[in-house]
Image 1: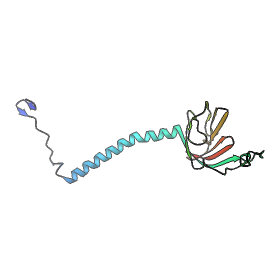
Image 2: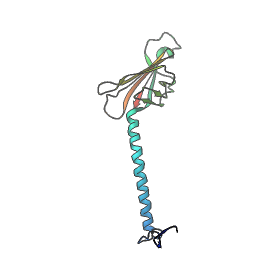
Image 3: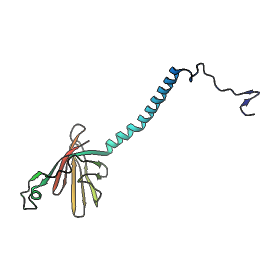
Image 4: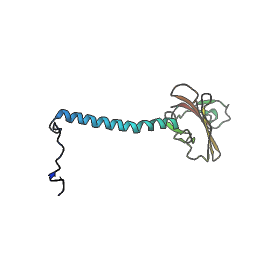
Length: 168
């Protein structure tokens, strides 16, 4: 016979107060479940956020310059940098993987790079510096890791353009 121990059937556990009948216990039970879900979520989310911050930069372009010969219709130029008439990269965001040097988004994207080299990982005295080459072109990105605070200034060069902004 199922559910029988010895000669008496197994009865369901009895609670001194009926949880279904008590609205107060029901709300406490919901609060407990919500609290536990939140705690479990935080345990999994915070390490991910911390690791993302340690392994990558999130950057925004705030200024775009170009060599003056571009503005003069490919004339001889004087070698000066001028604000670009079409600053289409201003306001764009990009990400930089600190370990590999890969850049996703913006003028400095490394999708077509044949070689990516992190020249310096950054320190208290040096900037994080990466150079990429491929197809006869070179791109350089320097992020001032050696500054205080969460925002770090960057400079990026992809001839004839120079972009600047901040990363965190």
